[in-house]
Length: 131
Image (cartoon, rainbow, N blue to C red; front, side, top):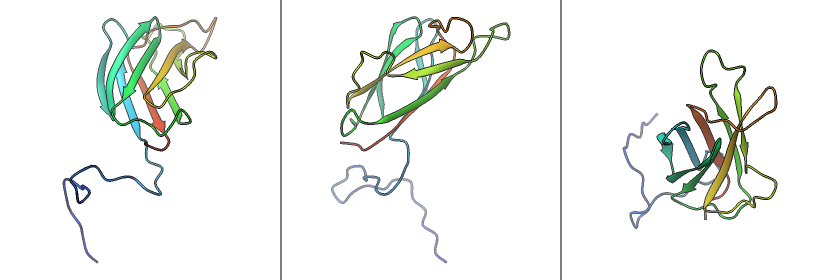
């Protein structure tokens, strides 16, 4: 049996290798959504915008093929006294049309009124075809 060890795989022209026949996430991000929002770690992410309480937009370095990509996420509760975990709503509203270059998300309480809330740790990923 042979072992292949490498640090980088590139196309013959030096660009990124296209993932084929794989279900790997094409984007993921973890970030602090309180105060001045900041990215903790990410893949294929170029920017993060705070659009108000519990509302965020992140942009992809390499765009998706179209707006028909799938996103999911979750969020950590604010502190030990918070009354429940938060959930992340991909798309953030029924009026938002998904696009190939970015994803909007909203963080809301799981209990009570489900109001928008900032979270100290938000985790999201996107699956779909890259352009």
